Image 1 (cartoon, rainbow, N blue to C red):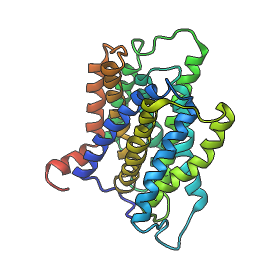
Image 2 (cartoon, rainbow, N blue to C red):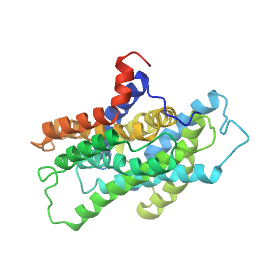
Image 3 (spheres, rainbow, N blue to C red):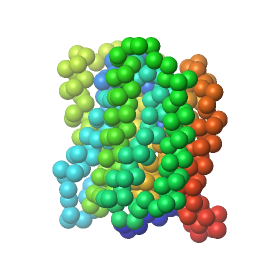
Length: 305
């Protein structure tokens, strides 16, 4: 794997797909929480996803590290920080915040990733243009996080719910850097491993917190399966491929798209209030994304893919 990220037209397509899929995740997770306790929602997501990725992994040969260089402690840490802990944080937090808030909070992953990558990842430098784009995108996020979106009810649980969502974003940022720094590893094996190790943590937590698994009914079970198979299994693999080819900073741009889709889907299907600041925030975020990746866009439109 090259240390310098390679950004192509395929990279842009992948982050757009991830933005849409993950933006819809919060809407479906809100629906799942109507029938299932939060930590069992996280367990079901990981469990369904793990079964699918295990089958795909075994079908492709069942290999994990592709060289003699292994790093299981880092792999376990990646697993905990990219699946178990953030899934539990988000499921618990969404009891008290809207799906739009949860989606918007994911944009803060970019804020955590940029300085970490600048220090830890070769080829990921905080240039002036990238910094200006970052500031512009952050301004859009602040507008999107305005009073129309976050009118507090005065309930402390809402405050803790917000903190849980931002804690999940911090976990994703750290795991993005750690995935990039893993030794050569099969992407399918990495996807299965992150879910498998994650399940070993979340399953006993769910049992201790909520007791035996509930019966969510056929519709609830279908929603849980959807959460596991699409945004968890499929999108997790796509996330890993994007990080290892285009780098964690480029991958973090997906988290600017996630809140936009989350707000729109929540307003359309869950009747969540649509903030008046959405259009302004969307323009700032997209302009910030374009400015921070101007070099990649120029190569893309010049046909250098």
